[in-house]
Image: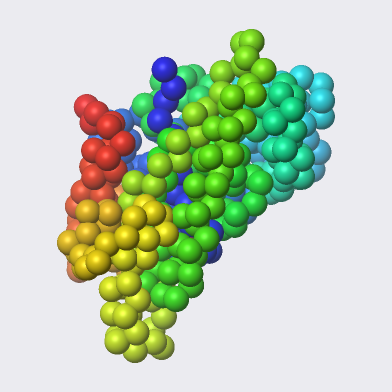
Length: 331
Ligand SMILES: Nc1ncnc2c1ncn2[C@@H]1O[C@H](COP(=O)(O)OP(=O)(O)OP(=O)(O)O)[C@@H](O)[C@H]1O
Ligand SMILES: [Mg+2]
C-alpha cells in the first residue's frame, strides 16, 4: 500500500504554500505522526525554512548534488539507471525532509518530452513521469512516515504535473484577491486534464515490476491566507473577493455549480482563515522554528506569547481537519 501524499498547490505565487507545508509538517509531528516533507519547488524555500545556510551549502556543492531531490533523479535523467534512493534530512525523530534543488528546473524539459511518449508505452517515459512518486514513497518507507507533504512552485509546468500525479490530495492556499480567484479558473480545469491524461496513460503502462501512482490529486479544500491582503486596499474589496471564493472554488475546482454558495466561514471546503502572524513571522524565520514553537528567549515576550499559543491552537485545528479529510489516524 502506498503512503498518502498531500500537495499544497496554487499556480498563484506568494499565497503561503511553503509556509503551510512547513507549519503543518511540524504540527503533524507534534501530534505524533511520522511525516516526510518534500521540497519539489526549484526555488527551494521549504529547504531554506528547515535548514541553515551551512547545511544548504553542503547540500548544494558546485558539482553534482547527490543529496537532493535532483540527486535522486540524476541517474534516470542521465540515462545511466533508475532513480537512486533519496537522502533524507532528519529534522526530528518524526520529521524528515527531501531537500529541494534549484537544478530541478533542468528536469522540466525531460518531463515535457516523456508525457506524450507514455502513450507509446515507452518504459523510460513511465519511469521519468513516476520518478517523484517513487522517490517520495521510498523516502516515506525508509522513515516509516505515515504521510508526505509536498511543496510546489507557482506554475502549471511539467514539474508540477509530475508532482501532482504523485499526489493523492491537494490543498489549495489562496488569498482574498482577484489574482487568486483568477488562479482558480486555471487550477481546477488543469487538475482535471492532468488526472484524465494520466489515467489514459496508465492503460498503456509497460507493466512488469514498475509500480505507478494513481494520480488522484483530489482537491480536498482551500485555506484563505489573510496575510496576502494588501494594506492599501479598502476593506470592501477584501469582502468582495472573500465572498466570491466559495462559489469560485466549487465552480472551477470541484466542478459543480451551486446557486447560493455559503460564506467562507460556513463553507465545508474551507479548512481555515489563516491569520496574519505579523512580527512572529520574522522571529520564527530567524529562530528557524514554526511560529507556534517560539519562546520568550526567541523574542516572543508578553502579548507575543499569547499570539504564539493562539497560533498553536490554529495550526492544531487545521492539521486535525486535514488529517480527517485524508483519513490519517492521529495516534
Ligand atoms: N500567516 C502568515 N502571516 C504572515 N505572513 C505569512 C503567513 N503565511 C505566509 N506568510 C509570508 O508570506 C510570504 C509568502 O509565503 P510563502 O512563501 O509561504 O508563499 P508561497 O505560496 O509558497 O510562495 P511561492 O509561490 O513563491 O512559492 C512569505 O514571506 C511568508 O513568510
Ligand atoms: Mg513557496
